[in-house]
Image (tube, rainbow, N blue to C red; front, side, top):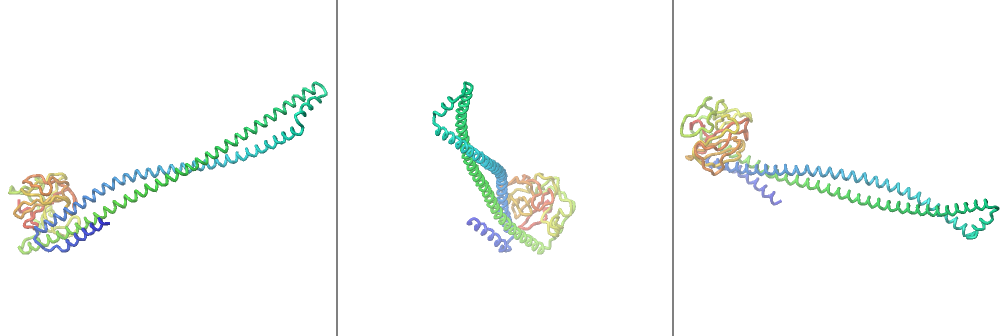
Length: 389
């Protein structure tokens, strides 16, 4: 919350400064413009870095989504296993019920057998054998008694087997139930993991979206501030031109620099079309007539841009509609501007000599193609650069 209040305060101060800047000399305005552009570039850098962070987070979110899909698959598998276990428990219970009924039947039969033997005593079997009418009848009765004894043994064995089956069925039911509980616990854990992953994703997205929004507010405020300063610079230039009776219209449609004191920034590439020159023209992007504060020369992207003369770099960074821009202070109130560059070869505060590479042709900012916008300020006002060559 404290960070948000600080950033909001900075944005408010920037906007206020943009409104309250008084019409001071153009050189001071140019310095303010360079400072504003540097702040805007710094904020944009933070946005770009945060966007890189977001890209990394999105990659991690992709992995999290894969993990959530895996967990969902585990949950589906567990549900299927639980359904199978419940069906198995139901089937085992049914088998157990049948075994229990069979055991009860066998126990009742054995009880009846024991009761009969008790009633007749142990001598009944001998009496049964010795009442035979002849030897054949005796043999027959012996076989029958053996069958009765074996039948009793089989009944006892069958009863023991039935009890064993019952015990196994009961143990299996308990094991299946325990396994069901375990599977349900795994399901709950998987669901908790899924919820945690989703919460982390939502939190990361919200945090980084807030960071981007904060710095976007700073960029917007600085852009408004820079536009306000640019308007004051142009107003100052217009006032100076009106006072001196100077013209703001374009020059010749054919130009080749002479071998003077200064270095032409892009040897072999010169302004040609009417709208490439300094003065009023139809803006190729915004579609209205406005002053073109410099000259344009089309050149391949990456073409080296040379310093006009000896001087110091007072600005090297993003400059609103000018894109990547370098401003060199040449002394005696003269400054050279190189705009729409694809990259820099110098940094702010550095000293350069005439002919040193300061950057490379590009198409950054408000641009329709690769070219160099070359401007010159004298006494803080934009003037026709061709007057120096």
